[in-house]
Each structure stands twice: as C-alpha cells, then as structure tokens.
Length: 217
Length: 217
DNA sequence: ATAAAAATTTAGATCAGTCTAAAAAAAAAT
DNA sequence: ATTTTTTTTTAGACTGATCTAAATTTTTAT
Image (cartoon, rainbow over all chains, first blue to last red; front, side, top):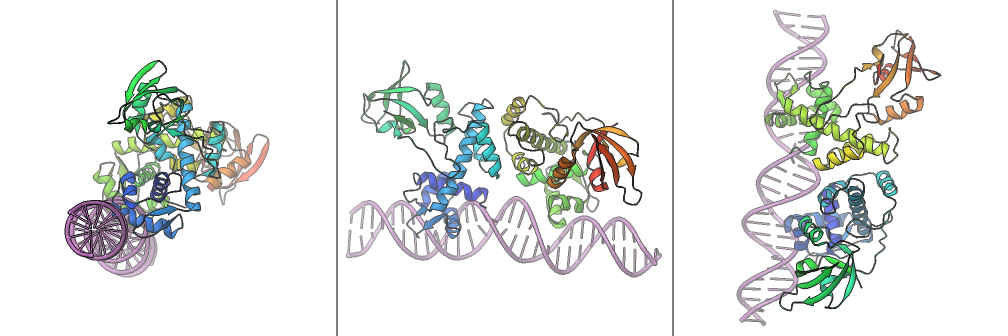
C-alpha cells in the first residue's frame, strides 16, 4: 500500500515522463511536487526500493511497469471523481481539480468500481482526458498540442490540461471546451501567440495557453 | 485548519462525551483512536492550546463550543458520505463506515453543500443517525438504548451505532434495520441478553448487541 | 490512613516527510 | 582541457505523530 505522498510523487513522475516512456530529472519532480531536490532524492530511493521506478544516480528515474499501473490507478480515480463532481454535483469544470487531488487518494477498489458504474463508465473526464480502465489501459485518441499547428488548420478541441485552475477559468471564459471547433488564423513569429477562432469569436492566445489545448485535425 | 489526525481525535472526544456534555478520560480516547495514553496526552495539549477542548491535568477533557462545532462538521460529512454511498452507489449499509472515515476529511465546504443538495437534504444517515446541519445543529429524536427497556415493551428501531462493521453485518442478517418494529419478549437476568421479535422472527441477542440499537416506544 | 493498583503525564526515542547547507558529480562555457 | 555553472546527492536538523519506560498523581482496597 502506497502512502498519500508516495502516490503523489509517482503520479508526478508518470506525468513528467509523458506516459512512462521518457526518463525524469530530480529538479523537474521537485518543481511539480512543490518540494526541494533533496526531498525528491529521498523519495526516489524509497520508490525505487519498492520497484515502482528504476533509478540511476545523477541520471534521473524511469517508471517501471508496476509503477505505471499504480500511477494510472491514481489518475483513473482522479478523473472519475472529476467526472462525478461535474456531472452529478454540477461543479464547473474549472473548480474540480483541487478536490479531486484529495479524493484520488481514497482507498477502496469497490468504491471506484461502483463510482465508475454510477457514472455510466465514462471514457473521458470533463477536460477531455481519457480515463484509464481498471487494468491501467488508456484508450488514447491522437491528440496534438495546438501550438504545434500552422495557420489555416481547423480542428476540434478534444482535451485541455487540468493542472492549473486559473488556466481552466480562462479557457472557460473564451469558450475553449472539449468538443468545440477551433481554427488557427495567424501565428505571430516573435512570441508564437496565435489568433484563433472558436465558434464565431476571434481572439488571440499566448503560447503558454495554446500548449495546453489538444486538438484533432 | 485541523489536520486529519486532529479531526479524528476531536470526533472521538465528541462521541465519548455523549454529545459534548460529559468529560472524557485519556484512556478512553486512547482506546477508540487505537493509540496509547501518552499519545493522547500530547494531542490533548495541542487541541486545548487551539481551544477546541478544555483540559485539567489528570481529570480528563471537556469539549468547547468551538470544538463541538468542528466535531459536528466532521460527523456531518461522514454521515452525508455514508448516505451517498448507500443511496447512490448501492453499497450495503454495513460496508460504508471505513470508506466514510476517509471521505469525512476531504476539505471543501462547497463540496459538502453540493453533496447535501444532490442527496436531497437527508436528515438521517443509513443507520438512522441524524445528520447535523451546516451550523452544527442536530435534530435529535428521543432515542433509547434497547438494553435499557424491560420485557413487554414494543418500539421501532430508529438507529444503530455504526462504529463496528461486524456488528452491522450481524444486525443486517437478523433484520435489525431502522424503521423495523421490535418487541422485547424476555430478559435473562444473569447476562442481560434479550429475547426479541423483529417482524415475525424470534431471536436472542446479547447485551453487547442490544446496547447498540436505539428505539422509540 | 496507609498501601496497592490504576491512570496519567513526562522523558526520551523513532519514523515519515520535509528542509538547508555542504559536498560531489555532470554539463556547459571558455 | 580546464574552469565555471548547474544539478544532484549527502549530511544533519526539524516537525508531527507515534511509541516505550519511568515518574507522578489519583483512585481503590484493606
């Protein structure tokens, strides 16, 4: 059984590794877990002793198969709870992240099975992110970061990153929700900001925003 | 903001004090929190420094007004979550206690408001216990412990204690649920066990069971 | 009323998770 | 190819929550 804290580190490592493939550096983990590098080193030792990650001193960590399964269970719980909060309790999609960060650590596999059933086995959360199944399988659509597309492209928003509640409030205000059609009009060279169209509205968004929007073309 | 652990101690003290009135001894707290007396003494100092309890060395603690309000918020959350688990997720009433012990510590007053609304503002939990309102007000029916009644009495079960999941499984099996009619046939002198009738079924229950059943007459 | 028993508190240790500061190693720059 | 900078690790300390063992206080029994 992993502790609350171990689960958080493992989840952070999983996300930073881009779904378990790439290896992750100590400082990067420290940044997203809001701790210091020294603390990360300690936790790395613990998680690698338990075989959730493999670790080469000074060269970062890689998540193991076991670690990936464990991380995906936490992510599954997070996304199911977010779905519950939005669909059943009428939360806005930009209000649920912090609460789901707590709920994701509740221990009961029966609870998650029943919650999944209650929600009608959703395949994505309110931000469009896929919900891993109970075995840790993720059915992922090809999702492209908006900032990597050139002017002229049209697509549909399929997901947004849910890490920052302020970003979500902003996306909500400009109408950038999963399912919406989006078109790139122009791209500024010097700061890579985009002029886009969502519905009938024209607007300009910075690169730090467009990086967090995923589309299909 | 209280920690998970502080909330648990405060809840334990509240319950042991029988709704905040009586004063509570160190060993009793140690027993229900499954810790040692020395640990309890430490926590008592912490909680009394924060003014949730008042403390006289060697003579136990009393909960303050502030402490009672805080404890009742945790109890409110516990009972709302139990109601959710049974009514919405189809859990049996004897399976929900441990999960609610975790859920009761989730921090978000908006969540609890919305959960309450979602459940239709229930007044009691699945075990018949009253759910305190957001101000900590408990609307309590006169509830009498079954073991204090004499043979011949008839009544209706209005609640059972939800602390022990094995007890609940047993009560479930013999049909002792809130709402059921119950009659005391005879009482054994030497062990205070009762012969009772629930529905059309006759059975004998020990004092340790009858203490946990509340009825109205 | 005093001795024995029980309960409570204190003292000191441990564990998990965190930190800062110093040391060591790797990467980047000259 | 050195030197400088950056990153990572180690060493040692702190906090919150826990423990055991010893000391203290209260309660109970004789």
